[in-house]
Image (cartoon, rainbow, N blue to C red; front, side, top):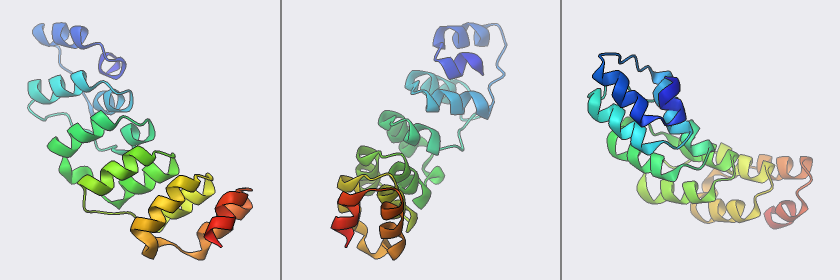
Length: 156
């Protein structure tokens, strides 16, 4: 697991050649979280999908769009509206846009709330353009509570 999490593909390959393959979801999640696409591909191919990540939010939080694209191809069932909510919560507009363009789940009312909470005006505007039905008064409240005057002014 540690080798996968740290991206040490050569070590994983050597261990596998010696019959030592103890990959768990923790190792796969760590590789995804840290952006080790080569490790994920190798684990998926070698272990025939026996190891798979259920923690889609980890690569989203860290902005690993290439990991997200790969997961989209191989583990489409992992996606839900929570993916866009997490992208908004962590200020990842590029990920949010990619999800919008490539997935159909959309976001919940939490995405605008998170964007307003962190004061990401560009994201608030983008979400309003594409998901205006998800906005509630709570977005204005959290923007005000967190001192984001520009967001408050735009939402008002």
